[in-house]
Amino acid sequence: MVSGDLSVFPFLPVMQMLLSSGRGGRLTVEHLRGGSLWFAPGELVHAHSGALSGPHALQLLSSLDSGTFFFVPDEPAPQRTLNLRADQALVGMLGDQEAWGTLLRVFPEWGRPLRLSSRWSDQQPVTRQQYRLLSLVRQNLTLRELIDRAGLPPRGVIDTLRPFMTGGLIEVG
Image 1 (spheres, one colour):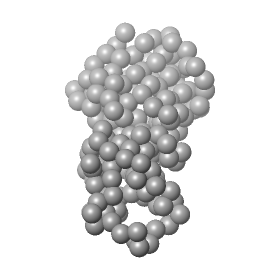
Image 2 (cartoon, rainbow, N blue to C red; image 1 turned 90 degrees about the horizontal axis):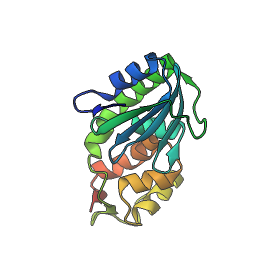
Image 3 (cartoon, rainbow, N blue to C red; image 1 turned 90 degrees about the vertical axis):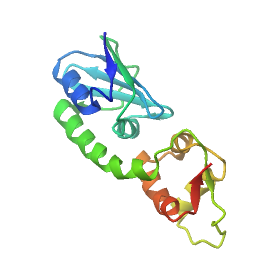
Image 4 (cartoon, one colour; image 1 turned 180 degrees about the horizontal axis):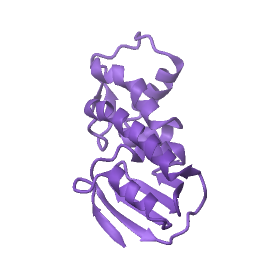
């Protein structure tokens, strides 16, 4: 079993090592945004994180910059939600990881509930998707719980909520 800390061994090099090793198995990262990835020789076949699976889970896992990980060799995937060769997986995760940098600076706290701030007004114009996500904010959910319930790509959720956070209309409770 291989294990380590992503603050010492960054996520993408760990993924590159595992994908190029030719081994199958499960990589699990313990973190609030963590989860598990399953490998077949030279490919990524399944991702799971909270209530997310497949591409949405992989997108969220690409945000990881810390947490402990361990790899269990030869553990088969419970299902196949991805079909990515090593190079496809790494290029996609690199793009996702770069996009997460700005978003994590705006939303660094994932374990405390979001709420509408005192500056919020019900007269605030919003789109249908913004309304749907703001309805989840009203439920006093953490960002992690909100992403699990949204049914949308995680970066899309945060991109939609970002102007409200930077404008002081939502805040971390």
